Image (tube, rainbow, N blue to C red; front, top):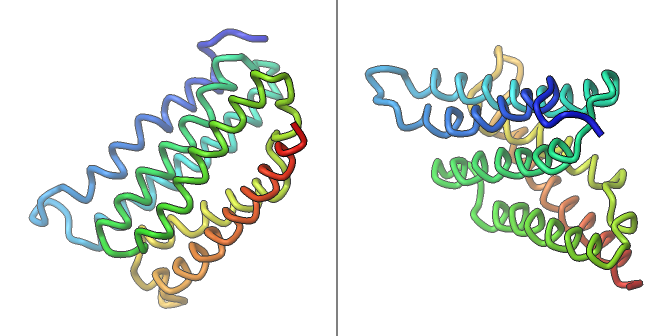
Amino acid sequence: MGKPLNIPNLLTWLRIVLIPLVVGVFYLPDAWLAAHEKNQAATFMFVLAAITDWLDGWLARKLDQQSAFGAFLDPVADKLMVAAALIVLVQLLRVDALIALIIIGREIAISALREWMAQVGSAKLVAVNAMGKIKTIVQMIAIPLLLFHDNFLGLFEARVLGEWFIYAAALLTLASMAVYIRAASRI
């Protein structure tokens, strides 16, 4: 099943290390970084972390370096990354607390559901599905747009587009949770 210390797992650890940096950049003094520079830095680090999320899974399969540790750590890193970014966005008044609560609450609830389903031998019923993947993609578009917050190269207002995407992500979050709960209700 692979070693716990391999390239995909190192990328996951990099994602975990980036989490406090994404959050911390907003606590730097304004004399060090202007507000728009903080937005850009946080967006860059979040996008880098999101890319490592895709890359670590792809490399694990391609290099045959899948491990039980990686299977555990990867979703934990993903959930921490999203939760930390959403909490910062709530503090910056860029995301409504209810939206953050829906998204973070769903992640906790579905993680607990998956744990329970694994214990009763039915983990496959609540394995990641297409709707869950679409929800994740929409979140990974919304969050950087909301972190960036400013006009993007004169083309569009990242804040406005990010708001549309985060509301879509919240709806997909509820819908995907319903799918998982319905699948688990067979047990």
